[in-house]
Length: 367
Image (cartoon, rainbow, N blue to C red):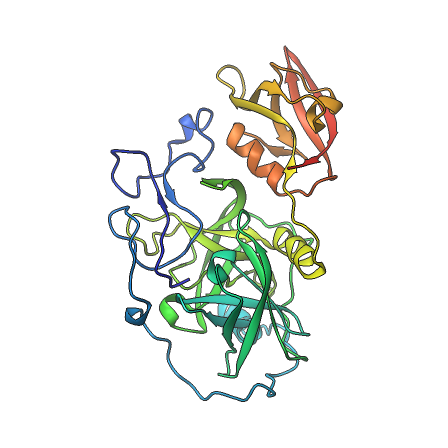
């Protein structure tokens, strides 16, 4: 989002935007998560790692186009992805009508229509502090959107417009996102609406840490810049696989390391927001550190009495090595994987106790 506020996290005394952590140190510091990085807001105004405030009036303005009335609606459906030999162009043709520009009093961001009855997914920081926003479709039609709510920790929010028959984007809720697969990002970087960039999925289950804790993200090298926040990350079939929310950058612009909330996590949160359910964070109920000897994992230092971990039989000294078969490199990875779940979800934990490997099932609590 183009916004007057940018959050930059880095250790004291270090220059902005250090290189990602060497692979041999992953055990002590979860991949990228405890390294400094730009987290949360994809926003304008980054300068030498400090919080910078800019005048929204000075931000780049979007290209203008004809504005329709509140009652006009764009085409009713997103077309199927064609097969012309230009996969990125084919995805763009199919998905562009579903990606919108969102403007608030603070700046600009992006959003994805996921329900034809007027529901739009975006990043929570795009609409933070706003009750209503301006929503512009790819054809220039404008609506007033109402912010239904959001989860700041996961950086997902929902906006509703008074319209029906909107072109809802298909979502790959059950797909297996693979490292190296095509990734197409669509949004409004710097207010330039309907902008398309492409690359690959660079990593999955990437632990990204910030002031609101760790999250498990899809990483991509598709160019993502301020204003892309809330926009779509799609596969070659034109299905949304993630909502773009943050970047790792030394400059505030694209350095080829962007992050998206997996679409299944975003859709799950959207369902809770729309239904008015309270959004609670899943909790295992342990504290710990990175394992320092033997294979990598999260070393359990404390188990909260009565917690999910306690009831499942997790003990102090256990090393948790996986969550639902997703490898855990350290405590940051464990926190990120737990956060992808909801309270009362049942998870399978790979545990090393002494020299024995075992599997423990836990039903997550609420925090």
